[in-house]
Image (cartoon, rainbow, N blue to C red; front, side, top):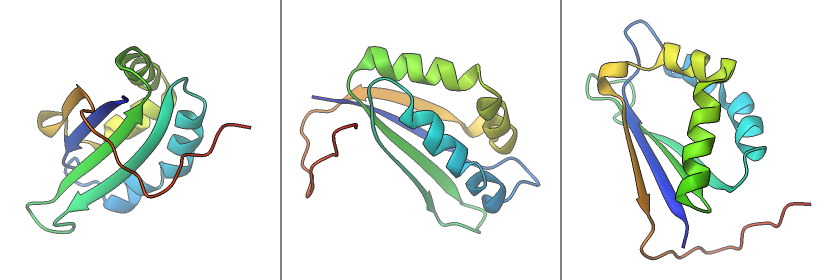
Length: 111
């Protein structure tokens, strides 16, 4: 079974959803290079309202690779750019093993 990392947060005051979304191409490239990375989704509940809450969900092969990927991100310029858009008081990172999984498609094997 894989390991899931769930990060919830709100944007920092004065930051926009577009500023966060502008990092997506760099994040995609960064994660694609990380050993054990499987899948990521970024979503927002009640976007554009006072109750706006972001959910960054990343699936990894195992807990060790999830931890290493997070450490690599925080040590990178991309991590600094992302953290500048996130309100640190609202950021919660959770790591947990998946207990069951079901997908409607197979993940592509790396070339």
